[in-house]
Image (cartoon, rainbow, N blue to C red; front, side, top):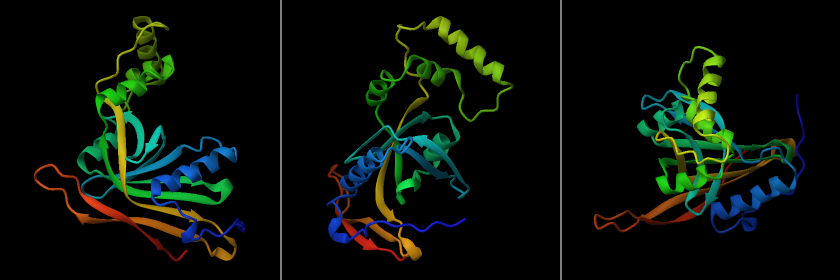
Length: 219
């Protein structure tokens, strides 16, 4: 199976000043193209020994600080991030011959930010966050449904549902973001923003300073 990609070349002069601004442009393009769940993103984590694992989650927020998704902190990805914060994200926008590949470090967001998002979730999704001990072995699907029904009785529709203590947001702060644009004859464009630190964070709490460098990679 093979497909020739035909699209407009991606040139350095076309890029936004920062990767998050460029991501916003491409994300809006993916939405406008009618892609199904354009916020679906593959998250790769690894143990401290380097054993990797991947899964698809839904991106829920992005801004200048990075990319945010939500999970059970006791899940496999939650445990691996706690032990090894280095992660990679992949947005596979195949219908428009584009990909975005992010590498960076992941950390939990604040509880207030988590609670604000949790309140926007459908009632059933809030109950599901409580009912499922994500990544744990369970005896049957009936066991999962029973837990959900018990929660539905405790928190009927219209009643507030508290945020589970082991559930919350993860923010990935990028140190590199690659924008991949497919072209025919495998002459794809790959432009990567790489962050260069100019001054490390100091003991007094001053933030690190740096800038984004754009480099072209061979396809």
